[in-house]
Image (cartoon, rainbow, N blue to C red):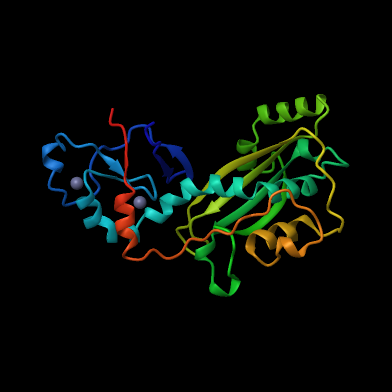
Length: 264
Ligand SMILES: [Zn+2]
Ligand SMILES: [Zn+2]
């Protein structure tokens, strides 16, 4: 299956599928550019799945430049989906509490808005962070309070949420995730990503203590609270992952990890 290429739309700051990717080798001094890469299969960078090279040689030549500009930013587009799944357990719990699904109709009218950035882009004193991303803020906002929330929670989501309730479930919790590429830069780009959790069955009770959802969510993901320390049950305990600095050696791993991409 061909890898799907995505890019960040600079105007909207959202991730969009690359519909007509440029089929040129990214290395500016590529010796094969003028010949149309005859007989070669283009490959994409295995880390960011965004830039193309005609050969390992070209990628190796371009690595210091690509590492400085772009590779990690593009990785953000690929990474956040996995991160949201990894922490689904804690997000489910936060949604249940924040949208008061046991006692109210909030789930039909509100969105959980979360802003996050790469964990390795925050000042050292805030860490160490066990997660790939650091949550900067989280809050509940009415569905139509801003254009992003309205866009991420479509009328169809609301209808499906009502249908889940009509069938005896709780409804669909909608998150509006905003990923900042760099929280401290004037040029910060945000990527908006919806995340939805359907509560078909009432969630299992198991949180004996009352701690506000905001503190528990941030504390757990950002590493200030250990889930094991809590005398409560959480469905899935997050596994620590990290974004370490890439060393020079890793450029070679990257080269070996190049994936074929179908050229059509
Ligand atoms: Zn090349
Ligand atoms: Zn890359």
